[in-house]
Length: 444
Image 1 (tube, rainbow, N blue to C red):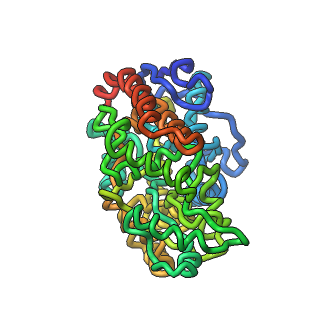
Image 2 (cartoon, rainbow, N blue to C red):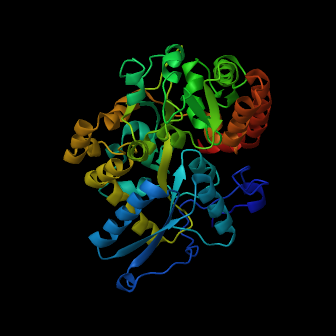
């Protein structure tokens, strides 16, 4: 049976995301949906064509295209065509739309949030039989990361562009302020440093302490909630409107509106590189770009604690679509094997800053050299054993990420109390939980 998605239910009313789940079937169906259109160069015309949709521009997008080119040059049977589709959410939206036209790629890069939506709709190919028959095994991946793409003892999503938030700081500014060359141990300690930091001049003006993302900041805030010993949810029981989650939201609200030390920004990492803020919590996947774009020495550190340590994993991974033909799915798995090779996984990390997806990649000469020459990269890897998967409500409930960062916008921009904001967000998330509870129990 072919994968079945109801577009009206699957896409949000705004057309900007995944708001609800429809029932589908078709894992491993090999139904052979048509591929998206594209142009195959003449020298590859006799090969099996495989289409992959990906969400990266700039540094990671260029690095990914180089990996694809390397694969196409390394063998004579398969041609992979990589098609850029915009952000993770935009890629997922376009995929849902394309399925209505019975046309889909063979491989897709999903975020930690979007892969779950497609898995719950039975539109991803189970990979167990491919691992069993081939040279690549799940055990070759970093245990923590491959586990996050596994459900009911079956693998659906393999790690590739995985990341965690990490703490960035302007080393030059810290030195000028007389501060130690390290990240703060707690958020309270960072606030204690604020007077010395904001007294400095960068480009003729005083920097702010930090900035929070206008969109998608709910991922970073997940770690902040844990740092105040709270949760978005415990299992599917929503807890964002209680305890540490509310305390974390209030701390950030006061830092912006009472202390005047922070603000909401469209691009905090751009503001960091421009010297407008002294510190930043951002993805390890932005490390290469931030280092390149900043005219000062960049430092990295583990995320600060408050009452506890908290750091979520995130980022993207690769899935094969169940609706592709058998031949295309087998060819797609060959590409998964190629990017998992130690030298290729290491190359991807070196060029982008994303975490190494496989254990062997961490031991390559290229990676060890990088760790030695730029300890910032190793800091993210060293932090990885202390991280954990995000609370289930954000990963599984349709549009939960939008509900949470929409609430954060009200705190950051409108000075609304966190307790009232998260009470409304919690009510919305609980409705979402009930819409998917039976499906989650079946699949997860």
